[in-house]
Amino acid sequence: MKPSKTSESTRAKARGSLTKRKCPSLVTFFKRYVRVLHRNIRMPTRAVKPISGYVLPTNTAAKCIFAYRLHGSNFAKIFQVVSLVILHLGFSFLVVSYQTEAQAQTLQARITARTLAPAKLQIDLEFPVETDVLSFRNSYGGVFGLAQRIGTLGARSASGEPVTVKKLAPGEFKSAVKVARFSYEVDVTEPSRPENMSHISWLNRQHGLLMPADLLPRPINGTGNFSEVRLSLDIPAGWTISSNIDPVGKQEFFVAEPDKTVFLIGPDLHQENKQLGSGRFRLTTSGQWPFSEAEAMKTARKIIEEYARVTGFKLNGHSSLMLLPFPENAGPERWSAEARGNAVVLLLGRRGNRQPLLARLAILLSHELFHLWVPNSLKLDGNYDWFFEGFTIYQALLTDVRLGLISFDEYVETIGRVYQSYLHLPDRDKLSLIEASERRWTTSPSLVYDKGMLVAFIYDLMLRSSAGCKASLSDVYKGLFRTHSTGQGNANETIIRLLSERGGTETFVKDYVEGHRSFDFESLVSPYGFEIQSRDSRPRLTVGGHLNKAQRRLLGCLGHKS
Image (cartoon, rainbow, N blue to C red; front, side, top):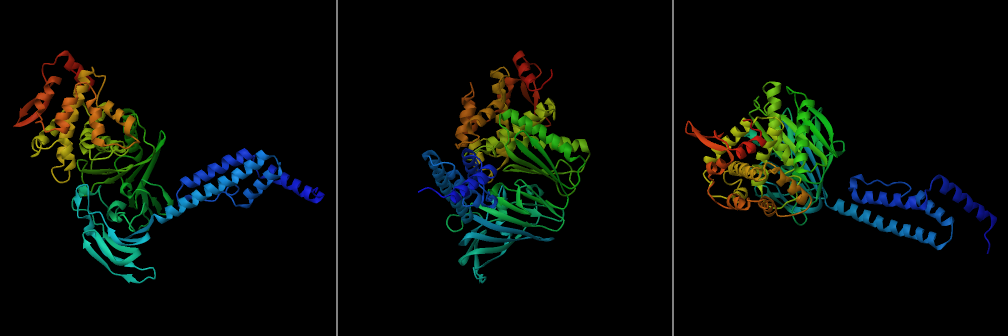
């Protein structure tokens, strides 16, 4: 039966109006459709938006498929249309599944700065699934008793009725029945030791640091589990927020990794942003400083570019430096720092003149910014503080010399002071570096820094001497990032293998990193042109008076001018 003239003209009109004005070619339609669906699958629920014309069953997409069908009846085109519909159904199912799963794992949290003096936060939570257990962190980075700040914890049922909550232990709470909504206060008074202010949450009249790691409960297996947090911040009027993650709304944030997230709040925050290669770097300062944000940014940028060269690895995405004044009107000799995720928090005494403050800032940043690489850009398992603290301090010292931040004499004096400090540690010959890392917060934490730095110094001298200055500790970092920047691995096994694979270093690493051999620093440095002199009953590291040719060459490549 032949179609009527009316139906033929209707179909022709449909073909013309749709395919010429709204519908792309079938291939283009397919590419855009898959790209949009792929984007929707990758993006979290908060960012998924329908794309008109490419996600069925919107009218335009349906009409386009109808128009393609009208263009021909051959088997290939029919197959293409059917395939497109099947792909749509499959991708749509994945999008819906992803969104449902994301919603089921999201903790809704609101943090309100209730008062500044005393410093109190009000925190309201809604769990994705009802639970009867809450567990808070009680220690971090040598700061203990964090859970004691949690107070007035309450819960409500779905109908709004109050539910009894008992405190089982510091930071451990249990409600009478399972509920989704909890609320509690947190005392965020400044810590008694100002040196701890970079490590935990606190608040005062000038500014504050809020860290979800010690403010929110930890995810626990079962009904108390969650994989991400949608966080709203309610701060005093006139204050602003800076963070190492981007907002998703007005004072709203999607926190994928609470342990690595930091919020700086205050009424007098200043920001400077700079594109560094494929990444973005943000400097936030609080209050007024003797130097400008541009000068501080220039210092940070120079150091970041140097570490990208040293490691062969460029930071991706968004990195941050938050610079706050150390309390008590202190000078630059007082400071406290923490590298958390992609952020460095630095409290620095700002009393003094511009140039000495800038010089001090550069020296501190040469160590702290390196943590954005080691360990924060590595995916290694295990405790290896001896390397990412002790060895990193030494590498930062080399960076200071290379960038002209300190002289060679200051480099030698610094190592000498560390040696003096090491001699006063009671466990210096009892623990290997690996054991010292495992007990860092229960014994003397200085052993990880002091012995780690001295071992790195000797190791660097060994490499430079054996290779005629064509190898150094920097090459170990390059090797580390070539093999383990993205993959999982045991940290100590990986690093020890890299340190030991260079000629003549295997025994040294076994003795002084893994083993308990007595660390005779004086005999270890003497082959390389250094000696220990005693002044006022204190040992002092110096360059020897009679250097041979090899020693002069070695010290020359470290910056010594004979």
